[in-house]
Length: 127
Length: 245
Image (tube, rainbow over all chains, first blue to last red; front, side, top):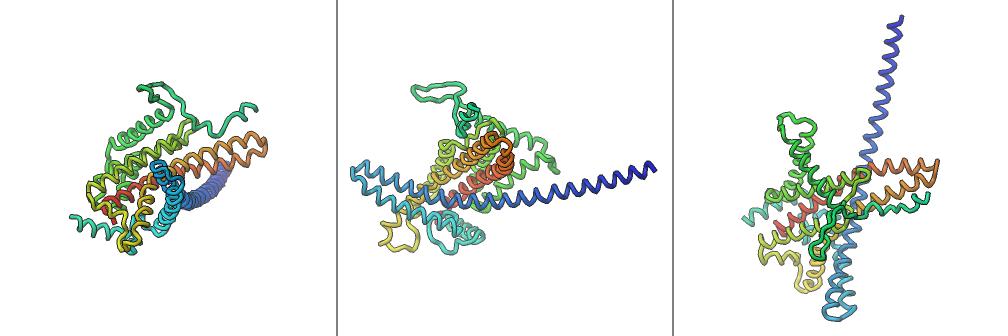
């Protein structure tokens, strides 16, 4: 009687444990996946913003320095600000197309596998 | 309460000199930021050296994490740079581990996140940028200058496109450093701001408290992600330098 009662208790407990484990595992796994995706999208969005702004900042800096040198305020700054904006758009465009920040417009450099093939080719060329 | 109000969320980024040194007029004090960098280097060394000490065929937990981090970067270099990138693997691995451990150790309460200082990340990015540029110049000599002239572009467009390409090239160290710095700064500030809400709201402070728990998880993801992004961008820049177009 007593041992049967113990068995029942143990069975109930193990069922409870199972449920708790399942409940515990699945949500955490889902959350981590979701956060991973969220982090990825967040960092992508962040990269676009930083890419855009940093190019404008560099353009501004170059223009400002030239103006300082030749006392032509504010013309070079204005010109290079616009060029910096163009460079920023170019950066974002390259990032979005998966060119991997490479300078140039090689259309075949689209995917990762293509990129590797090109690397091999260029390797041969350089050797 | 007045004490709580005085605590700024930006106070955690304050640099405090632990031991003051001066070379001439230059302040080269050993600060809490320097201390965290030393701790990071020691932690990385201990993690890798002690982890790989036994070198069993069937790795234990520690050894397999050490091997995993090695393989992760080795594959990254192989995939993005190709076989020509092998000599630069130690550098990229070092940068990755330094940034990763810096980010993760910064997540420990009361420690200091040195990657949240723009000067630290900027110098890291500048080393990468200068190194990559020097490699490109050594490898391609004058041919390097064609880097700024996209192939298949008419000469009429050159005066417009070359400055744009040069600006785009020079923006690399800035975007590389700002990305890491801003992510760490924003994350840690946000944590502190919401931590301030917890006490200010009393019982309703449970809501921001739960948010902090979720945010801490996200911060760990970001700490890893940003170290990874830093490493992969270094690889991509290196790839450009070795193969130009």
